[in-house]
Length: 470
Image (cartoon, rainbow, N blue to C red; front, side, top):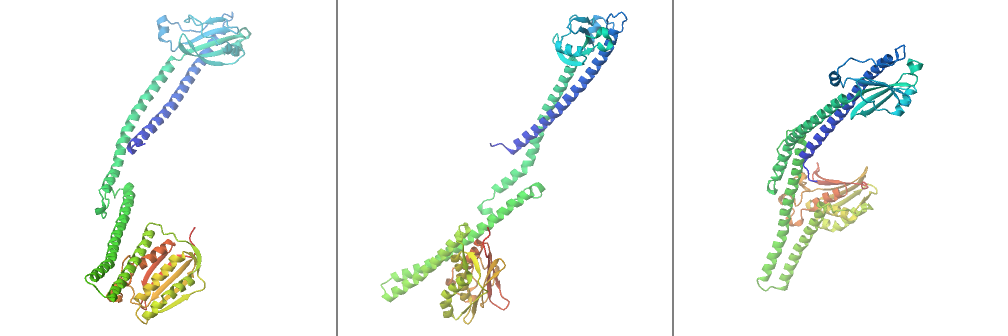
């Protein structure tokens, strides 16, 4: 249902107010009715006591009521104050009634029988269309002559009912007025309360791809909306950072892919300008093959990072001995290290058994050791240390090269140190190796850190849990 918050708030506030007023009205109505009924009952009981004494006080046994001397007009004007009285025998025969009564009071023989047995009986009935309150009062206590006589006293309830009707009408009108006032007030208040939300929405909608550096300023100082603005601005900050990272990544990837393609195109165009010897064509093919291999490495690395960014990098976990994995990778790179005159050294503290993906872990070791060989000058050393520290595996790869100029940027994609400082050609790597190391570490629930050593050289530390968290 597409109902607005403003309408729902106004409707619920009105419903709560009306229900509250109805509850108060019901309690007041019942309390007032009980008070009026108590007053009527007390008045009727007093009249019954007086009339019973008057009926039975004659020595001759003649029964008569104690009544005011009223004219017919006075009796009509005091009708609501008059208490009617009538004396009955237990068998329902009328013995005496008030002088202003022209017909008998309505008689309930069951109530009459109970009163003849000595009980006070209260009842409500109607007499000539008028609601009445009736009391059956036994007269046996006034002597044996009245043993089976019952005095019936009745009072009209018209005044009581009229007063209750007025009170009910007053509360109904009050509930209507309060409901309308509450709805109008809640509608206005909800509009005031929702105005900042609409302004925040308008500012958020005005932010486009080219203006992600803008932030929402509406009601940032209002306590109730500050957190909403902070959350939205934080989200915009993350979107902006992701957008900028994606833009840089796309630009860098385009540049990296364009360089080998340009080199290949130049080589092939030069070879096709005129007929050449077989050895010249072979040289072009070999050069082109090198660029194809470089393109393949870049593409594979980009696919790995794309899987990491999309959350699709799910390690195939198994129990493995890390020292053996590192040793195999170092054996594969030992020829390259010896060719450059760089020594490789492995130090493993016992059997470091962890639960990890052997393929991804081997790729981490390959990238780190290969990086170390590239940046270590002839006569230098690349050292690999494997140890289990508490519930984490610590993999450290250090070299005796020039170190990082910007350690904080080491894991940035396509980032390369200054070739003039490191003496490493730009074509010697893709610039994605350390970014993949960090991605694999995070996929295993760990992290990676790059730093410079005090004695010179660089060190990359990778830490991952020994066992994955359930």
